[in-house]
Image 1 (cartoon, rainbow, N blue to C red):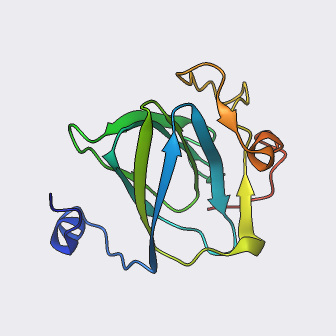
Image 2: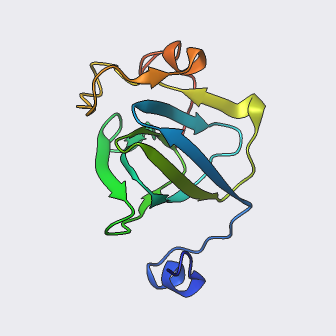
Length: 154
């Protein structure tokens, strides 16, 4: 499987360079996110090479007509869909399969001092997460609600 092609990125009208590539492996019911970067906002093309995840992006650009709205899609190793998560969006996923290998490139480097997030079950977001009883890190379980976060994306 071809996992990346710069010419297809350019044909989509995106002029991007990538600073790093990351991979994570997670087990069923593991929930990650919703995370974002403020000081070095990252755009991310995401994909799954093994397993299946419910992937969510939330628009945090306050000047956007879709501010606070989310987009959700199942990404898996069967149809090889990918999702582009633009800078200024929070991102998270929940693993649906026994194991999931999740890959993403980033348009900027990770900055621990610019890291932020929104709690996954904020009722304002209206996200209908599949899989009951998620496994969530202490860090992700203490994230603030939308409106209590500090990012100012334009």
